[in-house]
Image 1 (cartoon, helix red, strand yellow):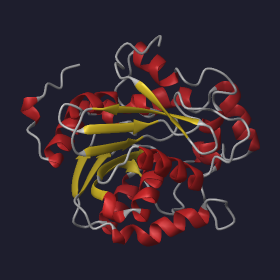
Image 2: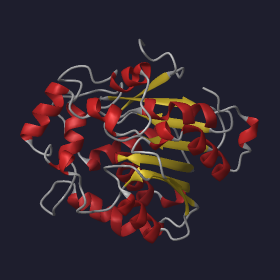
Image 3: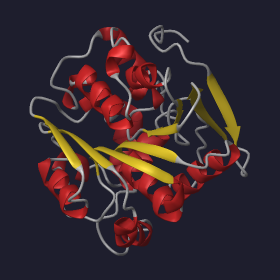
Length: 292
């Protein structure tokens, strides 16, 4: 896998009921931690956290259909409901009975969609720059792409994954890391889900995913488990407005702000995020090196 020399994890393949292939990382043993990426990233986003956690836990990090190295069907309903169903299929196949769920970006709605359907399987939650509720706050730079024209721009010019490599961070990514993020999205067909995820943002009740998201939102209160909120405060997309909504939903949650981190909080504050999650899980982070 060219340009992915710092991604030393064996990728496995889950065959979904519709015969699509869902790639995932499955590293380590012990209590299960599920890592759920968003758009326009993939399981590569979690590479440093996988290294930090897998000596102590079993870490599962899937690529959503259309993302990363999973199948990228050109005629498929890329809806929130289907992404949740795909995650359910994977975790059922892997016989996950209990898990900490760590979420970023679209991974929040997908992960919480699974969690509210399986509350007894959720041991802890880690929420990072994401949402799983309806909200009218949306950056104009994203909102203008939620249409057929925007889909052509995203797919033709890589106008989502490409700009994200500098807009989503406050510390410049090195060239190899940028290549790693862009590796799965090299042509028009490969970029289908990066466009479809944008179009699936539900902003009114007529949208296909509005009901799915509102049903998740109504059931968030049922998840009464230890919760950690890690937030990059310089995120142009999931601003501190969303962080404050999470804190209202889960007043018991432990909140750690990263004032100088952007949307890709784990890139801007890698060691601090890894240590915070290790502490939250109950391990002594000094037992495991966080060196690159």
